[in-house]
Amino acid sequence: MSGIVGYIGNASAESVLLDCLTHLDYRGYDSAGIAISDYENIEIRKETGRIEDLIALLEMEPIKAGHLGIGHTRWASHGSPTISNAHPLCDDQGQFFVVHNGIIENYRQLKNALIEQGHQFSTDTDTEVIPHLLVQYDTGNFEETVRKVLPLLKGSFALAIMSKNQPDTIIGISQENPLIIGFGQKEAFLSSDISALLSYTKEIYPIKNGEIAVLKTDGIKVQTIQGETIHPEKKIIEWTEDDFSLHGYEHYMLKEIMEQPRAIKNTLEGRLTGEGVKIFELEAFLNKVFDYRKIDIVANGTSHHSGMIGKKVMETLLDIPVEVSISSEFRYEHGPLNEKNLVIVISQSGETADTLSALKEAKLHGCTTIAITNKRRSNIARKADYTICTNAGPELAVPATKAYTTQIIALYLLAIVLTEKSNGHGKDRIPEMLKELHQLPEEVEKTLIMTQDAIDQFAQVTEDQDSLFLIGRGLDYVLALEGALKLQEVAYLHADAYAAGEMKHGTMALITPGVPVIALSTQKHLRDKTISNIKEIKARDAFVVGVTTIGDDDVGEIVDEVMYIPEVHPFLMPIIAAIPLQLLAYYAGTVRGYNVDRPRNLAKSLTVE
Image 1 (cartoon, rainbow, N blue to C red):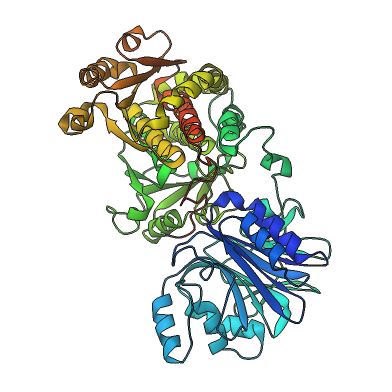
Image 2: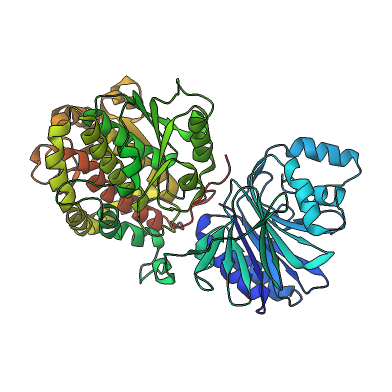
């Protein structure tokens, strides 16, 4: 989602800001802009579209050279993606300049009150109330004015602010929305994501709730809103610029699909041992008595699908109920919650606003919380009681691929340790799972080699299709949901997933001659029933592509095309079978001419609810 950058130092602020914004390109956005100070005046340039469009504007309308400034890539939430709504935004007097991620929940009330005071607004955004509030409560001291305004704002937000009357200063604020200080040599940076900083520094400090960062030409200071000095403990960035390189791939999505054997190995490393599973991050948790009556798994989108897979495995191994909820619903609609609930929240970025709200709701009711995320310093990781980091490495394509498979692995490892801890009734199934988990990275590698070319060919079939169906039973049904989501995200196909046995209860009316259907059949105990459902669809002349395991000739004989994948433990099949569906979405998107890394209207890190 929207990205913030800030710079103060001796270099060209324009060059640094544009470079940093380019490194935030993967987050998803529909406009971009910068504000530059030459220590006397502050100028703004902003444009709809891509950063390249902003660069083209700056070539036609150059901005005065300066050594400090702020920049932004905006994903429209309040107000359409227009130049006027693009950030940075300022008040009608041109006094204060703001870039903003997140949501100001009470902006309507604030806006109405400001209009009554004579303020004139020119955008449809919630952000515009901030510079107007700063004018309304201006004390003549930049920092004091910001401190006075912050308590008036409700919501989650990250802000970078500049003042015409103090054009040598940038103030950064983080309130439930990430903003990071980068420490350079006689220079300082702000960014909503570490990827923008890798070319400049390895030393960072995530601004915490209730803190204000003041960046000036003579240094950085961090204070509480009350003005108390904080001595920031610098962190070292673990990722490198090389982690963000395409390494010869045409798109990040394909690169990240192909990285899955290594990503899974990284998730297992140090946790899957010769004796079993050790999750060191959970040592304190596992030392306690396990007396939970229910497990809730809460997530959005692809993470929600990985949670559904985890639910089925946990319920099989443990003897307690497991419920999976969509984060955006959980905060407002959930069953009884108390200290007997274990709540697992899943988020690739660790910044998903809906999931963060769900986490707060769980903690409010006294639940123990475990986060599964790819970013150990994220808001969700910091606020959960315990965190399992997937260690998948950066995922820059908007569609989640290696995030999905590594989240499933993390859930399986958690299921195993919980089963052993609680002496769950599925304990005798663990040795076989452990054996196959050791071999899983090699099996994923084998699947990539087996399926890539065949999927590329099948993707050509989707070029002139408007819709497609995926069916499966049990774990295959959940996999069908994720496959459909990927096709919707990447190829803009109207793809629907159904439990195979439900087709005859209404959806069969949509099956006409030639309609493509992907039938997933990887669960042996459900194969006969799935074959019956495939026959029902074939009787209506659909074009059926079967995905099944090597040696399963029964499915191969009744479908139009078949894709064979290696057979592993039934619980691990959703990981193996995800590979051809990810590749299908990728190649379907490219054959239809779409930007698979940056699907329209979507963002990578959703920091608004």
